Image (cartoon, rainbow, N blue to C red):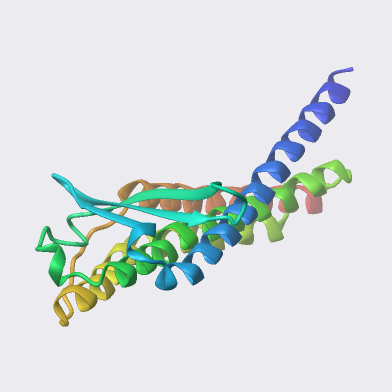
Length: 207
């Protein structure tokens, strides 16, 4: 009875992960489409405002169905884009960089992680153990990717954005510490799991 309940829970988790995965893919495709359209939008289709600690921007895309529109709103930290006069900023280029380098890449990373989880839940539903070397390696590669993304993304964005605002490149070191912590914890957990798998194999060989 207990195993049936656990199996039912795994099925439910698998469905939730699949739902989140497909939603993430749809959002990533949507952001990519918006990115392709943004350079061709009129001034009325883009809002760009200076805030206290950030720049807020909005993109308003007409859908061609009466007055229906698709609206995206986001912001860029002043660490990446100094609060300089708006006349010096190539607004469409900066928004495009943020859409691709920030929003789209984040969604791709989330989809990558969800895909790894789907592989694990699929194996469990097929009666296989989740403690396999391929899953350990998947967790390790994902953890490494998260750390790499969290340490480099803001620096790369600052270089690209500064080039389109001042014509020169500025280097801003700004880590996403939450992502770094998640990546390091995932990497440590993969090492512990691999060691546990090694001990289990050693124990099985002695029987």
